[in-house]
Amino acid sequence: MITSLSIKQVEKISKALGDPYRLKIMDIISKSNSCVQCGDVLAQFNLTQSTMSHHLKQLIEADLLIAEKEGRNLKLLVNKEVCTAYAGYISNLVL
Image 1 (tube, one colour):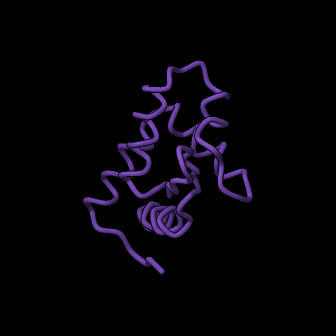
Image 2 (image 1 turned 90 degrees about the vertical axis):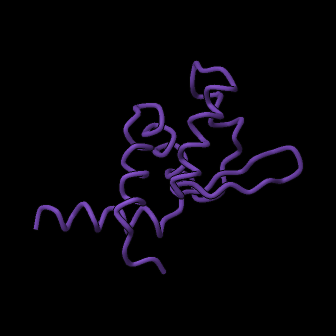
């Protein structure tokens, strides 16, 4: 279980979440109780596949999403441990 994040991790997460599309992607995936297919996420946006790939790459590299490859498909899941640690970090800023 992750209890704290380094400043570099917080910076990377903050940058990844600094885009409205990425926030919406996180919202969509977090509302699912299981893995979400990449194509299902793409279908909810008016974006090209390459643009969606860029956004997903940023979220995966920030450890906000866990990507599981199943054949040619990519399944996505929110990394709850990292999100909880990030929320804790932000919460401690206002205490």
